[in-house]
Image (cartoon, rainbow, N blue to C red; front, side):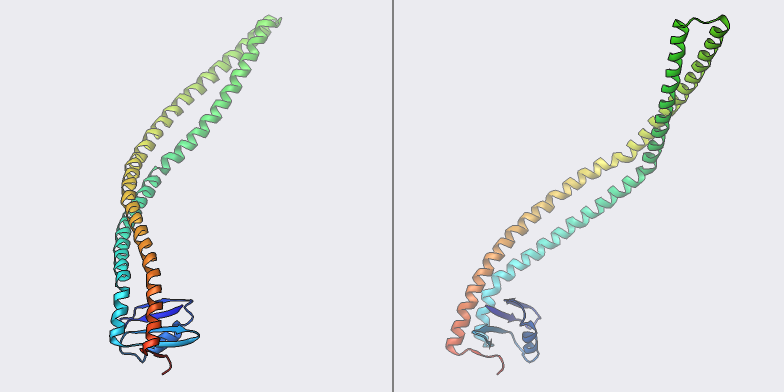
Length: 242
């Protein structure tokens, strides 16, 4: 069924497809008090009798109370939501603060990987020369040259090892700074968890009120249906165009 209960404060409680709202708003221009517009068997009617309108106000009162409760819960949710938003901004700022150290760790990691690859290549070459020295029949000059190559490789391996040790220390330092930068994130995360609890509670209460509003909405539909039939029977409902 299609109906619209119009209050002069501008509030319209309605049902149906809503394609009649333009007609209702046009009627409101010529009304000085509250009124009910409804459609029955294809015809539009209006009820303006103060006594009947008072009955309608009582019918809608529980729903209006639920609406106030929902508005209040919405305000609570906004407060918690704003707090969560601020914490999110803190988390973002903290993450950004750690980005330089994270990038530095990435760069150092790549350098360490390259050095490790080079070290592996040098040690492989050293092992090859060592096997050749142990098993090949070499002249004194060849043996001397081979040992010199191995000494050169040892020096390169030692130098590279020294560089890797220094690089490892740099990585440890960057890791420490990264941990320091990220330490606040744990505290912020805990705050977000705490902030989420009242939001969940408000959400549960909103769901409960929403269920009551849905139930009340069915009761209003039945009440309006009964009201309109009585209004048609007792002549309180008049054609909308009159």
